[in-house]
Image (tube, rainbow, N blue to C red; front, side, top):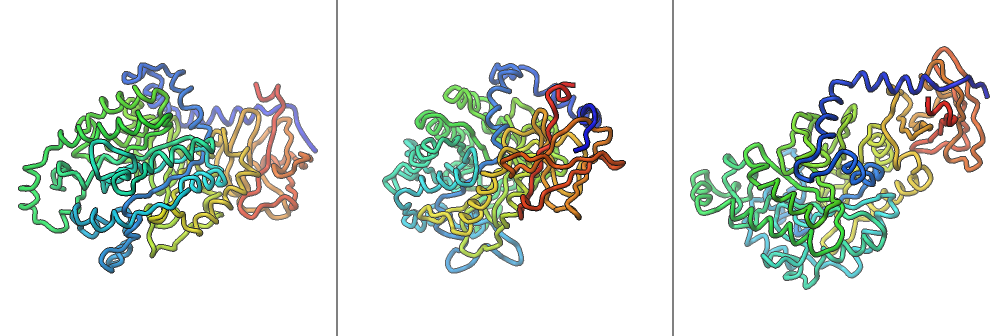
Length: 489
């Protein structure tokens, strides 16, 4: 193996990257390092609280509620695809324009969770390689999975079981971190606004009533009274079920956000019961849900931001972020949608997120009895098999410190680069664009013997000769290691 004297160029390349993105990082870093006025914590304390989440890199999202029983249809009509538009199944109440009382009467009897469903979820998450699970404690339909004392539209009153408790207990038993999705919309509440022009929110009654009728109906509704109710429900889930690690709020509009939810008060209450909890920023209007706009990011409004259904092209430097994606075209279960992502796509997305310094939260939509469809289980376990062998290159890694490469992605740890080879090179020779590179050692991560690969210095950088015997159909990983001395330079 040909080597040189040091790996200063790698450190130099990292410095260049930081300089290149300096103005953006400086602005965000100034925001993130100040003492948070809501928590009173310093930057170091925040880093300690965020540590496990930043190292996790992979999580499982679960969307499950009454909408799972509808399965994308209402009165025999498939609402998954209407007029060429794909509709998400958990919004069936709004898409079909179903009044709250009718919706509850029709679907509550169909929610019949089988025994042990929560344990099966937890085992699947573990098999998948996820470090945390976020599940929908209450979606926009307003149905609560826990035993709520402020409504009878909840799991205990409908099924005789505290489904929230079953899920949290199962996750804790598997050693997984617990995240709860909590919608601040509530189509069941008699106080939640129906006038979509004023609120910026869709509402099922908007499909059935005129603007005049909605305005008259809204006149009898009280948003402040609803917010009181919502705060009480949030207190129930964070105070009665042991450690909760993530609170995944959803969602806000330009018209109603932040102060409308009494967000500062709400977040302070949550932290009172769960001091180490990590919360996203969707109590505030977040245009970066569908784009990469960071103008509104502020650690006093949430610990991380949530690009939805996409991975940011260049990551979000200086910001904690998590991309959430469906496995097909819907979050909730649909009996009509079989457009599943491949295992290869799941592996590549997991790697891509980590290579840009973010987390990947991939969704499962169980059926009404809690069964996760076989197509999801197969793909998650295949992803898990890859993670079992190559997880070292994902967990606790940081973003690629070099430029992008054509053959795959790069993740990093102190003294190591992980080269993720999506496209196996011609003649097994991989070129890494590091010039004047120093002493290195390279091996295939799947090679338990760590037999060194041949590394040559060329005009194009380092040429590494790979071993076909360790080629993986999704992503073959090479470890490039520096010695301790050069790693500190």
